[in-house]
Image (cartoon, rainbow, N blue to C red; front, side, top):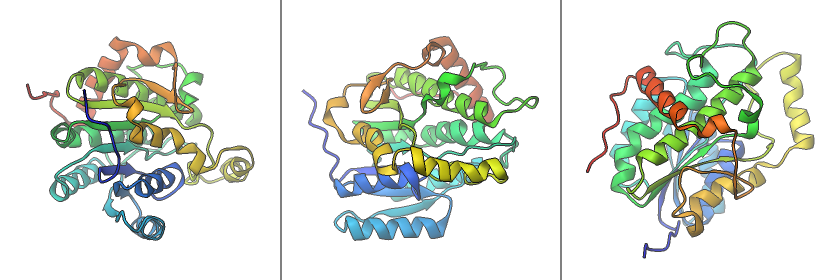
Length: 292
């Protein structure tokens, strides 16, 4: 029988950890005794979050690794820093994300919503995977969204240039999170490393605050009136990171801390495998080879 999963003392990485769900997740993990690494783009905000964790969870000191998920070079540098700094990675929570009303491109020429929300998860996880495997049992938690349910999905057209819709691009990127999770779980079967994705619910966060214009100015005030607090939105992320009851569950999609059913295309094995191949090529990675 496998040993009981206890989060106390475990090394947990949380991306997008300076606000919203990410910050609430980091705080929840720290309060439970985990050793949290805050992976964030803004150094000042990261330090504010670190100080908050130090005040509310003084027995669980956190550290900071800076990373801009719109840059492959930055992702690679952050992963290298983490591997040099930490001998174990017990849990990786991929949470960082953007919502772009208008089409923009990353530093690598990738459509930004797809690039940050999916390829950011994909590349960061792939680079850290050897350490996660060495740390087995370990967990990968990918924050996705029910937004995937309102879009169509074409794995051969993930970066459209015509008739761009920010809402559609966001939904497609969240579908990618679910497909990536399923294919990752399939490839990791039997290794002791699990991968699950989740819908956090409608949460009032900083998502979308990078946009400008009258519509963008309405997003945050309306969100504050009708959506969950980040603490409530983090509950399913924390459930997947912390609870022993999900130790043997992998490749699943959760909402409200329960298994949920995504759209059929988001669980299609052929689509997931093709997305994996496309993602490897875009990130400049060799095909994944796991140790025997």
